[in-house]
Length: 176
Image (cartoon, rainbow, N blue to C red):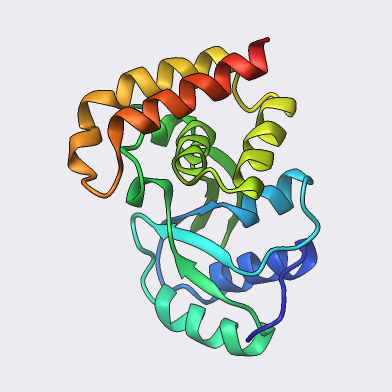
C-alpha cells in the first residue's frame, strides 16, 4: 500500500510528469485529484488520470513517479462508467501546463454523473461540493443526464432507468 496524496504531492507529480514527458499531450484529472485541487479534500488514495492525447513517455514517467513519490496512479475517467456529456472536452477545466503537457480537470458534469452512478457516500459528498463551488448547477446536471440518456445502452453494467431516477432525485433534493 502506497502513501496518500496531498495537494503538494499532487502538484509535484504533475510538474515532474510534464517535465519527464517527451512530447505534447493532455492529462485529465478526475476524482480525488480534482477534489484536492478545488480544496474540498485534504488527501486522496490515488491520482486518477486519462491521457488524451497521450504524451510520449508518460507511462514510463508515471512508473518512476509512483515509486519516487510513493503514490498510486490509476487510469480512470468518468467515460469508463457513464457516457461523457457532449462538449466534455470544452468544459474540462485547465489546471496548468508543465513542459509540453496540459493538465486539466475532466469535465465536472461528467465527473458528477459518474459519481452519481456509484452513489457511494463520498461520491455524493463530492457532487455536493462541486455544486457548492459553482462548477455546475442542479439544472446543468439535470440537462446532462437527459443528453446522455440515449447512450446509456452502451454501458450494460449500468441500470439506465435506475441511474436516471437517481440523478433526478438527487437534483430534486438539491433544488428543494
